[in-house]
Image 1 (cartoon, rainbow, N blue to C red):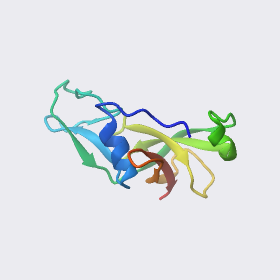
Image 2: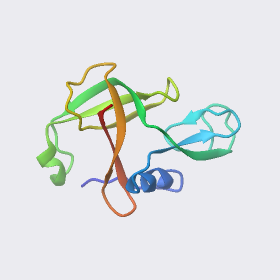
Image 3: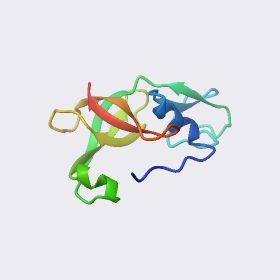
Length: 130
């Protein structure tokens, strides 16, 4: 499977998903959530970020159906939907992930984060029906 390559900023995110937890960065100074992971806050530009467990609930903002396998190991999944989800924590917090729920995708569909173990250190984010 084509897996992400964790770096010093993103490793806690991928490791948490592998452990079945959904963590996101939040600034301890201005309380703004930051995505994707980075060394400074996207709001106040401070460096006081912490990893916080997120409930992982939100609404489908948009989606696509992937018809191209981007790796031999993904061929069995094609076609599959990828949803862009607006999390409840913050209006501009949008995260993509493969949709594995049973409902027909539509804008505003309530979903929740689900984790999928890829390796010992890397997990993947998927979305399912809330």
